[in-house]
Image (tube, rainbow over all chains, first blue to last red; front, side, top):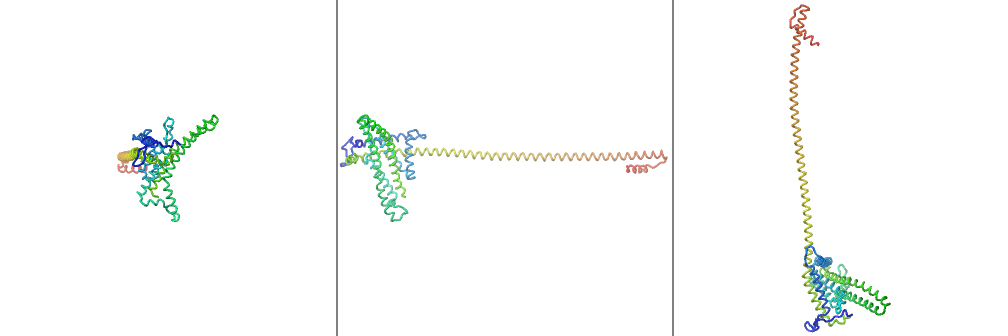
Length: 253
Length: 164
């Protein structure tokens, strides 16, 4: 479980106000690397040529992907959320993928997946949820509460349903944060367990090594490929659900 | 599980640095670059749409031009046909008039010639009558010894000639 441990790298006594520790940890370092890589990736597509090159095409595909996502889920009003959803998607995607890069092969360097910490995914989920709340109350005022009241339903059904709707609405930030955190952590734990099988199998002699170690290793290769897929899917799911929640706030029923 | 074990000591640091780097990314990339990239894509789409519209307009113009040319050509052809018809009609009337004139002239000549023949024949007839009457008087005088008046001879000749 060492791969999830947060260690201060710089300024372990840095404080914001009274007792609020803001040490620059390995987690913060990987967030910084993610931010820089996202910036480099998008900056590479800023040539603004009429006939795009490969890099520009790649960046335009990503922005177009998010643009289409918001157009499909929110409609024309979704255009103004493209910067936020794009940043969210790219930040999570790069964070997920960076955790899978085998930099551990270099001695002394340990990969760290900040999206496998619910403190990090929680902040992103609360950000998205706050945007939904702010947009909802800004646009609709207290009429936003009608989101929980099912239309064309008799009141004796609508009353319990609205209660359920309210609970499911309040659960959204938790599900958003936990889904990403659990998916990333589970993948890394699974790889770690299989890797320990390989090591233990190899250490127990030739027979067990071939019987346990080799299949575990083959499975690790397959699961690594699956993890790359999961990294993309989880980033997409986060962006998709955020855009769906924004749709609720933007177009009340 | 370090995520829970280290929660209290790392929570503020995690939140702080995530907010810092996410905000930086959002401001620099999301607000600074993404609209420009979307603008580039939109500009390209507009350019393509504009080019397509221009091509369509040029095609429409060409089609219209061809249509105009066709109608003009048809009009020209019709005018030429009319001209030919007119010339034909004029030539026909002219030749008809000439023919009629020639026919009249020929008819007149014919009538004149016939009249001349008629007078010549009647004068020749009269001469033949005179000669016959003289001959008849001579014959009567020589055969019968009677001297008849020329008028009587003439009447007798006429009587015989009339009987054929």
